[in-house]
Length: 560
Ligand code: AMP
View 1 (cartoon, helix red, strand yellow):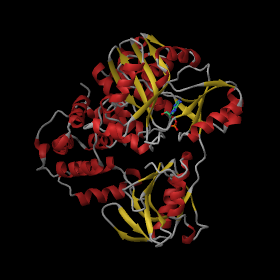
View 2 (spheres, protein in one colour):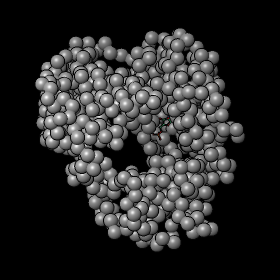
View 3 (cartoon, helix red, strand yellow):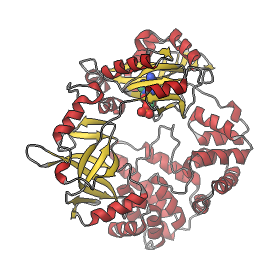
View 4 (cartoon, rainbow, N blue to C red):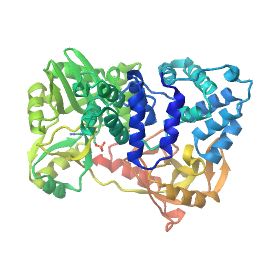
């Protein structure tokens, strides 16, 4: 059994190294000493996740739960913990410091312990993730207290970071993949392939150790990474670049990967979460309209409004997240299914077949009713026509796919290009901010935005922006706003004198009850600070409303 302490020492070592090659070598040597059970766990751990991406498990520990557990396990006050957090900007440093100073009377300080193992920590994390309902908070607290009670400062540093998915040792998929290859004498390509098939580098490492990497393949019931698209540079340019293209609507919905084995159906979301129970009609469509003994199908689920147009993304999320009373929500927000790819059929893996071949099989097994239509052409005008149709029907644009391309799981390559309208930006007033967490604790990391009501002049909330802010900007913005802070509100939030305008880009405007304006921005991103604009020049709610009405060709039809 490998101790968690030696894992923490590994992390400490890796954290201090800049070179990826060196990191890879150190990790490889650590991996090569682990047993098979540990290998299942450690690759995710070094990347900062308690579980692999494809696992059903989610830790669900937030900063406040963690601070409370640290406080209870060590006797340090919450105020003290926040103070160290401000000073260091690192939850790991906080944990190390308070565990170091632990008052002797607390918990197991008197117990002569052997130390916790990597598998102990993993087992506690599993229990934590399984806890649900009313008791879950208590269970989480119990396990975290136990872990911090048993841990020394170095172990606590990495338990805390792991619990918050904030490892900061600069190890990502690429390094782990290379380290697994190096540890067990496999090629990085073999390891990568195994990873794309299983979404689980732990499993890949375990098989590599056993010399059974080549046996890993796509299996029904285990999600594979989905192929992704790049943003194309307009229709003519993209068509010239690709030559012949297979054009499909880019449906405005949410990705589904469907596994069928006989009458058994499993559905996975874009993030490879199991969402089968939330989407009964999708299960029904597949049973009724797909004729295959076994298959893995790729497609988009779309929420259909009464007018036949797709509902905004937030509506479909309600379906994906719904665990109970599914039928009732399903009546309110019915789904359509549009299949566009087939990666496995009747025991055969099809990912290396060209798209046109996969499509041919897909057309043979799936009824038209659930099949995304596809046109193969090299004429930009024809593509433009299909694009207009898609936008006119309320969808996002088109996907251009290379007919000769294989299915590349997990890849955002040039074989799939998305063509979408360029969204306009909004100039919004900053009315508040939030101090960051972790590394960003001494900076204002997210900003509350507002738009004036044209009738009353009152600034109404439209949400927060935290994306698009580089480390450099973070320093500048914090300086800029420091003097504008009016009130330091609850916890990390501050109210701001409205003076600065942000130009903000976004994917979509949504109706929202969460903000006083009645609108929210989806995926807001700071484009720049408009220091050339006065407060009166901010975009008002009338403009927000008109952008909402016209986006995706919705032309005034409200569907929120
Ligand atoms: P994006 O999320 O903007 O990177 O665009 C990629 C997403 O578009 C995919 O993950 C799918 O959920 C969605 N999509 C909609 N229609 C299609 C289509 N015909 N082919 C592939 N992806 C599609």
